[in-house]
Amino acid sequence: MLNGPMAERAKDPSFSPIYGAPAMIFVSAERDNELAVFDATLVMANMFNAARSIGIGSCWLFLFGRLADSPEAKAVYSKIGVPENYKVVAGACFGYPAGEWPQPREKKTDNVNYVL
Ligand SMILES: Cc1cc2nc3c(=O)[nH]c(=O)nc-3n(C[C@H](O)[C@H](O)[C@H](O)COP(=O)(O)O)c2cc1C
Image (cartoon, rainbow, N blue to C red; front, side, top):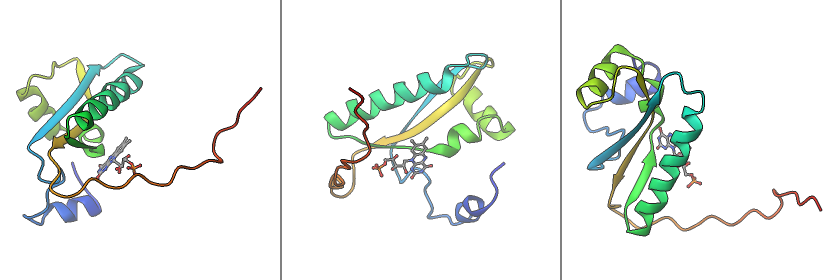
């Protein structure tokens, strides 16, 4: 169950945790797969890059994985076809951005150690 500041925000009917996006993608993996988080992260990152290359924006949404084992989320995930022995690891929203793309941030140059 959702609690804390997010639960408070969710009471506002105009609040959209998915930024009004028209599509969500969930990545699930077998519960006993100890590499699931890593695999799911790679899958998501590839989808983010692919989406961006065709002008579609995206945002990883922490809560959809975090709450994956709550009875409410399990009921929804089961309805959309996530098998019982799978767990939703990651969820992200996708859609055409309503505004401008953000400018890339200045590149850090001091956070890579080269070992020769
Ligand atoms: C594991 C993970 C969970 C995230 N969860 C959320 C989230 O719940 N809501 C949100 O708006 N952004 C979420 N993000 C997106 C980050 O806030 C951020 O926009 C993204 O990592 C891109 O970072 P940058 O463009 O600031 O470098 C998440 C990112 C990651 C990697």
